[in-house]
Image (cartoon, rainbow, N blue to C red; front, side):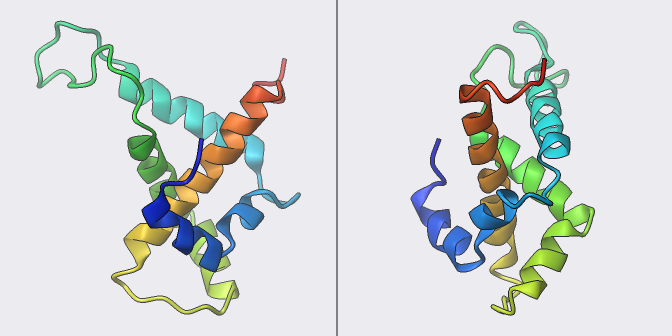
Length: 122
């Protein structure tokens, strides 16, 4: 899985992939969050009304998961603290792309760990 082209420059500017690959990044916690986001997005069964859930049996949307992860990284303060520490500066208009790029960086590491058999632990 690759970070989408329109977010790759943002990911590189803020070194988001390097951040999520650091030893002190709580990868297991965030991988659990990936699993939980996917569960939320696939919870509803086909045939339910749109009010009950619109996802049915469609494939999981990485864009939606990345946005959920990025928002969570923002809400717990980790992303903001990290981005400010890079001293790159950013505008309010850039923040949504930073958020989503960070979510994709976590997803990228998650998929690699699944492929290598490192997640889930077992």
